[in-house]
Length: 530
Image (tube, rainbow, N blue to C red; front, side, top):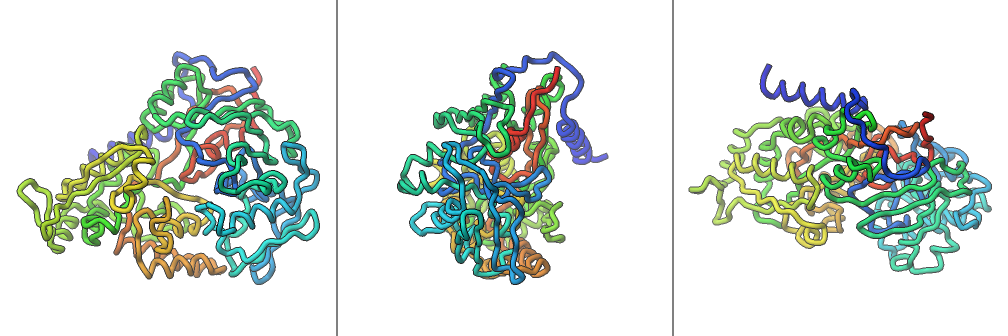
């Protein structure tokens, strides 16, 4: 058995233990967190806004709001504010939703079709600062037909459109009376969801109470708090002390709870990847030869074994290797010798200190990662170590997003992303040149005409075979011209007090704060009977 095989077996054993939950009893901790009908969980990030008009909750599970549709545990669409799945016209250009009757917003006002129309039209308005509005590019119009029917008309047969309608619905009678970008609806939201926001101390916590008038029935968890704790170690400490009922943790910290009989460890499969942006506006990372060399100089399997303890898989693009959308043959095995040859052939010659130089330019660049994020830190340091073996100096730097964002045009970033619903959801915003430099969209400012064309083909076709061919093209182009080095897809690990019935996880996107985790369905939890 090789060293790597041994590591892989050990990592797989740990991942299996974590996924199955509680191991043998050992010094059980107190349940913690508060009364039996309350829950306090630790999350790593918080949204900038709680307004769906500005992008909050677009993937569902928003707690305060509901969409027309929602996802079940198996990620299949189910009715929410709509009473059934939509009727789709034969040409795929019209989606008709019949709305659930008797639904009210948490302030008591009735929900109706006009709120749906208001929400979608406002998001699509050019004056609305919603970075995700390109996700609704297919929508030509939305109109109400009476109080209980909404019809969407599309510009082209956009196959995954129904997935877009998990987007939360905002109340026109409140949000429509204030400035969409600066009004206080973003911090004092009102929705139809199972919970009502009672307080938001930014950088500290979000507090919720059960909505007694919720159309799905008042939740058993009456008070729910999300503590915002960016540092992984601090989150683990507060969980261990009994201050939290649950938290998301990196694998090495989740492992420390595996033998705790009072807590359960849950793993969620995800589309969540970590990658390194390679800005085209930097003299080193803008060189295609450097990008191709780095893409095969990284030892992805070692990262999965050592950094993730086996709780993840190697990533070669935004699509996980076990997805039906993955293009077989686009895996890039670790090949340091070939990476060195690519650099040699491109004129990047080793200097006296082992770092390559070309035309007076030293093969060196900074790589930023967010402070307190151990998984990103570990990936950044491992990437830097692998790059140095090829003769490229990568200087890992920690900072907040306020520090990092202004530097993204020229500096590399240890970034993340991923969406399980449809390949268009992640790849278009990540790779299309039209969104280069648009906030966190296409952070590398990647430009590839073949990719641009394929992304449009995949977005606009209603034929599954044609869409698969389009995304195959995208993935093959990323082999020839990588704008990012994808490192790993990460399983999300959660530790939760073992006092609730109904704890499950979904297949999760990159965004795993308020809407994901075992609390994706906290409104359905029930206290365990003693």
